[in-house]
Image 1 (tube, rainbow over the protein chains, first blue to last red):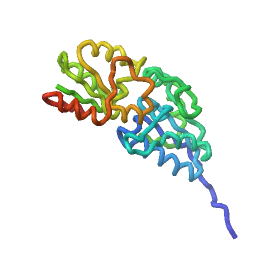
Image 2: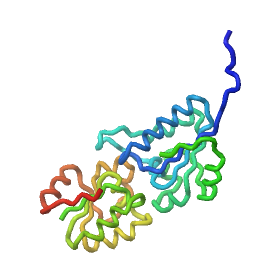
Image 3: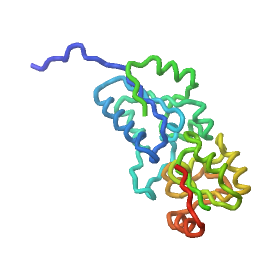
Image 4: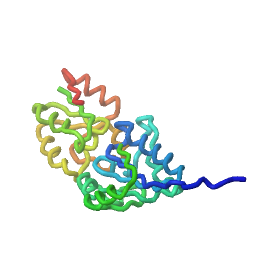
Length: 127
Length: 99
């Protein structure tokens, strides 16, 4: 008979994204790890600060680079119950971007609020 | 001289250093994450506009498109394809790749 795994642990995971897509492999690798973490039914949140906000911009077209455009994958995160995406307001503003320029609904937060979110996690993975 | 910059101006000072050493009449080609410098209405766009008075600035179109920046490129920055990249290399006596 199947038994429940006792004392199943669910931890709060935060993935901090600070790199633009395509120029380095960090952004894609982060997304891969997020999907793995979500498959283990952990409590997953994503933070986007600095150039990390560029990962979410609309209109990405990588045909000319012959690289995979992974921005649509952010729209699939909802299916993995990953719905907490936090974007730092100042990072958006410095880059002339607004919430309307992003491929998924996010919560735009101040640096202070982002610090609180970071403070409330069990595990933080930074990319 | 043709200068190439492949780093985001928000993450590295590569672009700023390039502009410091780019002499009047030289060309600056933004590639990879460097293309973010070409966007209008950012924290660095004023600096780019000022630089345009003395140097030509280009951005590599496939890199611009990959990053979804095709509708944000500021006036005065010219887009080139890979063939245009080669032309720029041929037209200039030397290439300085800022990394």
